[in-house]
Image (cartoon, rainbow, N blue to C red; front, side, top):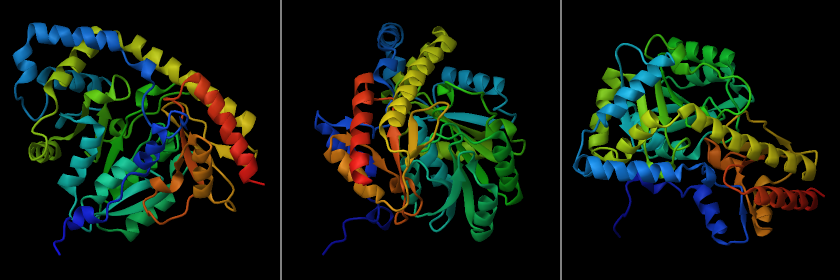
Length: 395
């Protein structure tokens, strides 16, 4: 019998989130399982106008092949923006990718051989974990708390995995926990990366969605030795369907990433890049982001209020200062996966926490909730149903 799959993909399983989202095809299901921006956050009229302007003024540029590195005006804008935040140094380069997901995937592509190790926060974003797994690497999860990765645990993981190529982190409003890595932790983890000669891949899709607290300097802005690669995206601040992200880091690494992209996508959608450039150069970005932050501040507070009013006291929650997610943790004596199954039977979908672990067979007692996608009515009703389900389940 013919073997249909390569070794790289034979062991890959469907995303647990995508599988759960199948249940949301039922219009009666309230989904707290997605990770999408709020529909009301999309600047539809502005995008429509800018797109029409592009096709009226330079249609051939929008429809023709372009360079892999990205649309030059957008790249120049990104360089200037990053430099203003102390995140673009002499010798750096920025390239445009198909969302941050491609920036993450191409980093593994250019740095890792099969059997190499990537250290990642435990839990972490399932999309990145699966991208890494597709290159035959080993994932080593580093325990976290509300302040980020535990430095002692990170050093132990670095000692135990001398072939580790990089540390993957989402320091702002992390997916799935919603937690933010403190400045003290960032400095400690960066020093360990330097000590053990490994890169840090800083993934920051949610950083502009801070609606409480004070901003924390990025790993990239703290780095003086070229140890940090920085992945950003316009998916959460403009529209994910555009698939425009970027990767910034030392030129010698980014030049190889360009070659890596040429073997897959040739270049990111050029029309979308042109649209993003026109948006960031013609729209008041501060006011746009302020509007988004207001939307997510209100939605987060509404979900937390609903959870506190309806869920048993034994369940605890993260208290994010931005982003899209809340992490709920239940007592260890209960079966979290069974609870998630019971919840979706009662028409509320959440994501089991073990979907986000480096070790797919590890046990989790947490689950992820998304507050950005549901309507206010769904947030109220969904937390009520979830609370009723939990009270019956925890008897």
